[in-house]
Length: 245
Ligand code: GLP
Image (tube, rainbow, N blue to C red; front, top):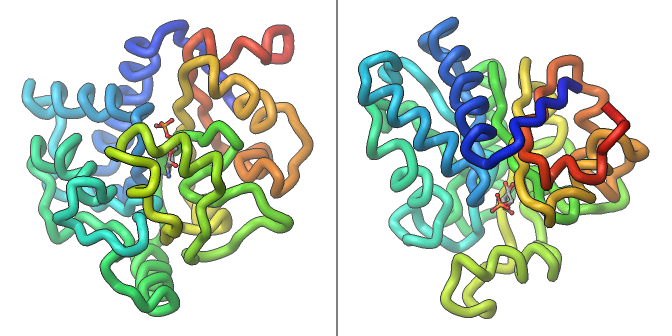
């Protein structure tokens, strides 16, 4: 794992946007795995700036998002699909046909997940997968569990995730209790992985991800087995890793 301390959220976001932009420059029709959450918002703003200045072209880029709440349509302002449109896709020249997010509106979980797995596999998996990390070490919506997950599947969100994500909803009761998420194996199939994390509330998860035992109780710890991972953080997120890297 290459750990990069960028000190601030702004510098972390610039570095992440640089890495994403470099991938698009190297392979204009690359497959990007994208993430939601508040952490990558600055990285997406960096990509939009580069597009607006004419240095980045999304016309051939294909994207696959990690996850979606079960039961929300893509028009629902709380859905991850809506978030991605709002934070990135509506502001760059990506072809909507090249954008993929699990279909939260499909109540048939097995079909929705199998369809998504087939699509990601047909695309040849991700050239670069962007990840945030949950306070409990989750990636996508792969929550701490007794075993690592494989393909896309339906998950019951943990209380801690529901509570953490409730800040984006009016009331905690409004947070959906289930989600469809890419599995850990699908994430690991990406050729390169970029994790972004900032803030003190991610410090333990970052330490467990990079230096803890590789156990499904911390889903992100499996990234230690991937040959090509960048962990890009601010000072606070790396505060429990001092002297370890
Ligand atoms: C959600 C998403 C994750 C994300 C996590 C952290 O649970 N499913 O992909 O990494 O939140 O979010 P934030 O960046 O807002 O802390």
